[in-house]
Image (cartoon, rainbow, N blue to C red; front, side, top):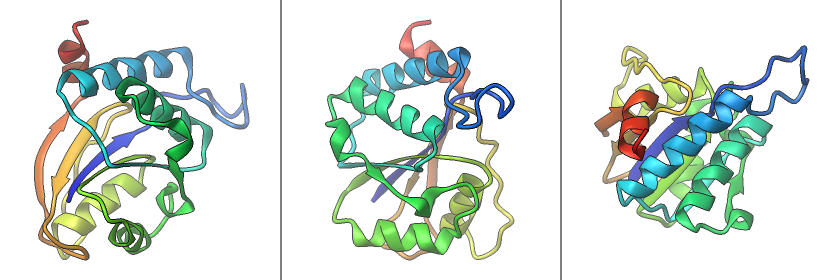
Length: 162
């Protein structure tokens, strides 16, 4: 399974909007990342999002760029910021797909990546808003997946042509 992990774009502060949707900068970050994903020729059998506005907006931007039906985005509490990685792995295991895109939050994305890659929490990936990681595994659950790559938002902007 190819597992793609993206931290949502930059969001508004709670003071400005308690729902913390994407800020204008975050919306632009995500749009450029989604364009880069399309340019790279990536496609996903399943797109999963946290129910939080900023993650869902991120998933929707990627879905739109790829022609993936937005109504098919799987919204799950199992990818919220504090969700235990083993719950996310159970969700992934239940899917019969080859590639999955997950729009989520810190610290969850870091914990999930570490959980997939090692038996301890010692693996750290510097997730950034709008950055994209690819982790491959032949089976789930696992602690021996392979980090194929991580693209920063700046690298994705270059790929998108900006």
